[in-house]
Length: 407
Image 1 (cartoon, rainbow, N blue to C red):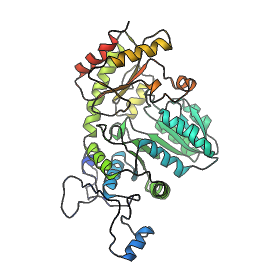
Image 2: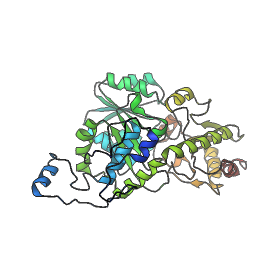
Image 3: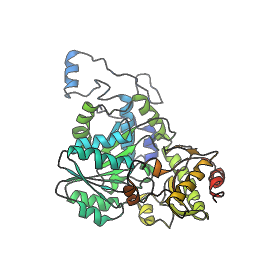
Image 4: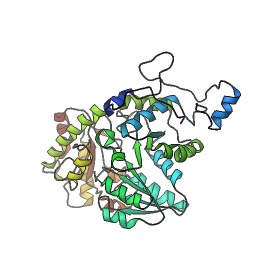
């Protein structure tokens, strides 16, 4: 990362405009579409300038592991949309979590996080970082009292994903921010599924906003990417030194794809959320569906909180349980629904313009123990649906192909 001043823009622009216009200054060629700088090194004007730049005494690009103009444009654009001072792009969503943890923690430090988080996040914090002496406590996502009770003098980070994958659990961001700040800790929020279109955690007190750019920021399932949005101080003093030494960098081409993805994020999220609500309402009435998990439904246990935090929109991700008498039958029936698809995709990614369905218990959360999955509320009959942009009638017909033929 090299600190850059973006192209001059007037104050007070809306996020939709910032998503289209924020970028590094145009080159001497005056390109309208942001340039793709495919280079690993940069020619320096003279030896003294080179020495000052490598020493961090003068702004300027030095090496691809430290910064790239295309990556800078993506970072500026995402930070502008999230309302933070800065952002740092990484090679994947999980690498952004790695960067945050390595930058802010040491042996003996403590993390509090939700039991409803993404399976790999649970394994990374609870198992991998435990090997280096980092302690952690898992708490129920929606239980504010449990979060508060879990805090210790050594607690450095509270980490929440809201809504969660795949249960769409929501946490009270403002309440968790108060708990964290009273304990002298940071609140980090995974905002992958709401995106800054629906939710800006920094306005509710969050210190760090994490993204898997692989999901909705790209929006078409093309590249892997991640990002951390935070204050200029956190980014430059904590994240940047670790980034330079670890090489968790985002490739310039992937950054360019994300820049273009951000330009349509607002209209995609709104259109996909509209379809997701319609599908959730339809599934809730289907005789073979036991339960639907979607924040936009009044039946969701945290519907009011979700609507308050997410601009009155439920998002594009939902999950549902097929009816079954036991776990074995539930798995069999869920697999039947997935194997009956002819249009929609059986795919573990999400955020695509194509609707993607998956079986969380055997994929995203497959490496967790049965006890961990049960604690997280993920059963064998659960199917996650990341709704795309297909016609709502076609979505219902394709999913109904399996649901309507369950024995």
